[in-house]
Image (cartoon, rainbow over all chains, first blue to last red; front, side):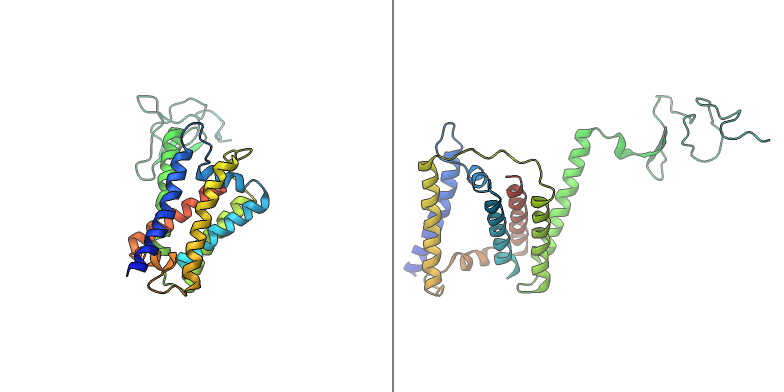
Length: 66
Length: 186
């Protein structure tokens, strides 16, 4: 039981850290990029754009089609 | 020879009240306030140049609002239908592939106006993200390595029961669609 709880807490902390980073990035003059800036930067090259959209499609398939 | 439409009695601006049926010529009758009459059955306005629907009389702002509301209805309906699909079914696969194809076509052929990406990212700022993403993958990989047992479940095993109720699954699908649109604009 304890191991399962630790696993869930681990996932929760990591996902929480994404939100924290995003909101820290929204502050003025922040060095941390927001989620949008991060993906915008990754999607600048055509191959990055393709891979990110492929990842989005995979997520949809993974959670909704199977 | 009988007078034609351009002959006497059909000059522009002439009051045609009393003639039967809607007339869409420049010489049609107007209301007291000057606006063209509207057909009560069809909702068409008998303006100059032909019948005009009420849609054409909406302000651009209202038109955008109506358009957005219609699009939201379509997306919610689609998400509701997609969320009702049984896992591992052809229908579930198709309901995911259709938005994928639409988003792919938009990204490739008809890209919308994109939000300008940053020229560069701060290395330290980016490293925070990299650490968190690496931690997520490590945690997931650890669960995957242990065959996703009950005592060390993978993220999928934790998320799937959460999104199994139909309304929640609909909301999750809708969020997925909106994320796809957000990515295309990046």
